[in-house]
Length: 112
Image (cartoon, rainbow, N blue to C red):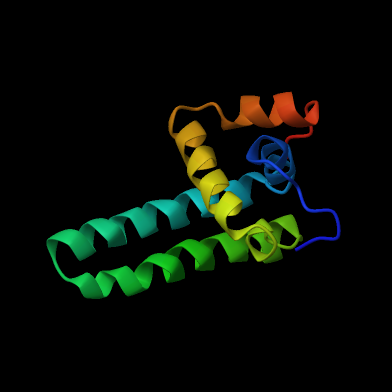
């Protein structure tokens, strides 16, 4: 946890958005979340063994995005639950085509 922890999710969200300015990083997060959701579905309908793949899929894509493209430390390390909530919020915004507008609103236009 950081020296000055962020006290609410509403305050965390702008920080989260600022950690995801790189389009490739966001796309990798989207792929990881989609893969994780597919593993949940497979676990329910096929075999519970697929539950083991859920965190592997989600984190592998996201961490690749942070380390290789965004060049920052994943928020998961300091804020695991809020980061997961942020992943799903970003996923939903990307599904409806609103994530770039959210980045612009939160960061005053610093989209990469």
